[in-house]
Image 1 (tube, rainbow, N blue to C red):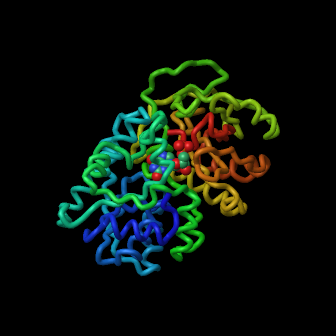
Image 2 (tube, protein in one colour):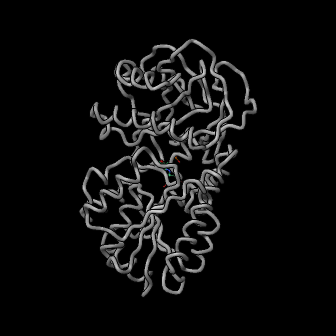
Image 3 (cartoon, protein in one colour):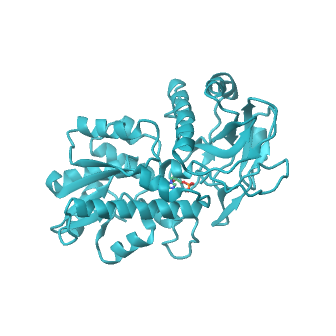
Amino acid sequence: MIKNLSQISEKILKEAGNKKVFLLVSGGVDSTVLFVLLNKVLGSERVLGLHVDHGLMRLNESRQIMDFLQKEGINNLQICDASEEFLTALQGVAEPEKKRNIIGEVFLKVASREMQRLSLSTSEWMLAQGTIYPDIIESGNIKNTDTIKTHHNRVQGVLDLQEKGMLLEPLASLYKNEVRILGEELGIPRELVWRHPFPGPGLGVRLLCCDGKPVGNEPKFLPIKSVGIKNNARTYGQPLLIEGDLPWEELEKQSVDNRAVWLVERAANEAFEAVEQYCAKETLDTLRLFDDICLKFLQENDLYNKIWQMPVVLLPLKTAGKPCIVIRPVNSIDAMTASFAKIDQGLLKNSLWPKLKAAGLGALFYDITNKPPATIEWE
Ligand code: XMP
């Protein structure tokens, strides 16, 4: 397995040959590390980065990436605002795999269009991706593994490029923590390298969509569906709802078989109703608002570095006409397995909830499931 910096650098030099390399920089840890790595190994004249703003970023995220790279003196990154194109393609789409495929295909369409606009001929340039090892396994590219979900860097167009030897994936044998260590070795500041991972399809996988069709009305379950994983296969079902003040240990016992959420607080004692919901500017802005409050809560309470990742998911659910979110704090080493993190319940109720409520939230749920049986993201 190719793991260390000198081996990876050698591989890049060999595979790139005399070509220049074009990279889509999502702003996540993987693609940022790869971008800095390619700049170091090949030199800035042979590298060009493109940040496609798909409109699925967090609040102020695109600007922060640019600020960091500028500070590092890396200025071969272009920005393309394609958010309208992505949102148009996602209109009315609820099925998670379909959303992923659309995001992946639009990504490629925008990328190849930009390459043409930049006159990046395929005889001179190749495409690089920050794919890491778990992405490959979970897309079913390795023998005997079922497809759990399609990663946007494993859609057909990318596989075609790979077949033609036009695809460079230097991080493909690395786990997440190994990518972070590599980033540190490259001199990227700790606070950037140890940022929580953020999926390529961005908030597209955290804004849970729903076509409005009923999914069951058993009161013990939320009337929505989320992706999970069981016996190495993908599941798509209703999360169990647990109410009442119970310690984490008690709650954990109830979430062994499928995804379960604990109701932290709610604004009113009214029913949870499923609503039709898709990725659109308005719903994304709502998610961005709550996501930012949750991020600041982690930072302010010295929790950010103690938790591996905390997706904030907007559910297609309303109570008393107000939106509902679930937070999914997890601890993990390599994202292949994870355990839910146990944040102090008093802090959730007395510090986080009042801020969310003031911003218009109807209910706050907390995912109390490990991976497996549930995935980290909700899709
Ligand atoms: P799951 O939901 O599969 O997530 O338990 C495992 C880890 O992978 C991240 N993730 C992605 N990262 N592109 C990425 O770069 C993707 O399409 C993608 N999907 C999930 C997720 O945030 C978690 O850290």
